[in-house]
Amino acid sequence: MDFSRNITTNFEIHGEYAYIRNARKTVLDTSGNTRQAEADAQSYLAGIRHLTTFDLTTIVEYYHNGAGFSDEELNNYFAFANRAYNLYQSTGNAAALANAKNLADGGYGKSSAGEDYLYVRISQKEPFDILYFTPALTLMMNLDDRSYSLTPELLYTGFTNWELRFRTAFLVGGRSTEFGEKQNDYRVEFRVGYYF
Image (cartoon, rainbow, N blue to C red; front, side, top):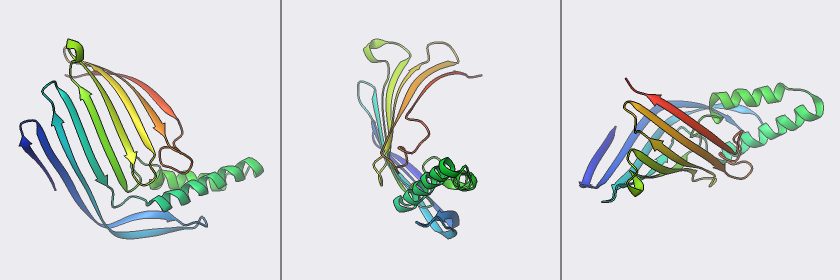
């Protein structure tokens, strides 16, 4: 279920709640053994949105993923993946590395795999009177390990039915953190969208 309510003309609160019966996930222990965990899970999101008189929009949200992995479960996976890679480098045996990849595909590598997140987005419509131009800055932080993604973005919509978007994502975090263990440290994107 979800809700959204304008408290004032420029201030809105919103939220979502999901109850998942018998949510399943493959969990890795400190020894590298896997087991199937099954439990009812509750996920929810609570947020606010504020628009200033000069068209600065701020969105702040807290997200709890009840079916996600705890900080300890993610640490166990990262340690296992590092051991698998070291084993592959020293012996050439790729079996453990393949197992780590399967675990990533099965849940550990998905977006928002952890339990608790903070999302903040700030965007300014047409700053300095530049028509159809909107710069933005987005933060997505794993609150358990304090790693995060920071994404500055430039959007231009000055052509009918076209959207030009340039953004760069910086991933920040130490070893054994969700964003610190991603395959890249940053990403640059340029997207062109056409709507018909």
